[in-house]
Image (cartoon, one colour):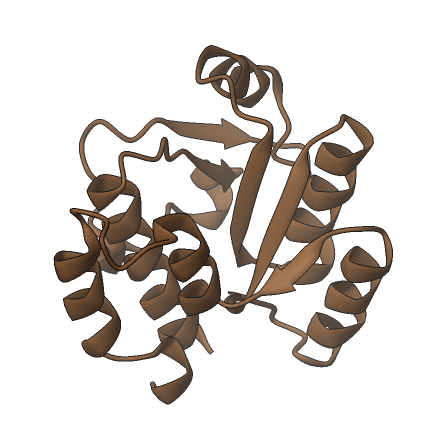
Length: 161
């Protein structure tokens, strides 16, 4: 279901810009597997880190998180049962609080998604949706970004694609 994941990812890209939240992308062996979906149109300032490990917690990502003083991470992307799950578990083992977007993950083996989400939830990750985490990030309808944020939410839900 790439359309659903792309929709959630686009929301998160917009929100990161709107709410000034640092964003990074990792790509699993891009020379062999290809790059991030071109439909996402990543901002030019977005760091993109190639990797061969399944977890995204590679040294440049660790440096990025430390540089931005982040202890909380929102994960979305492909191969829920591999890259997302291993990243989630490793982040939590290193003291990070992790949210995994149920509408922002997928797999070439769809039957594995629920199992992986259950395992991450059981181990302490918050499994949620892009809309839910966005409202948590904005927190208040009096936030100066709320008007633009609200328009983004009204534009459509990834669940409806």
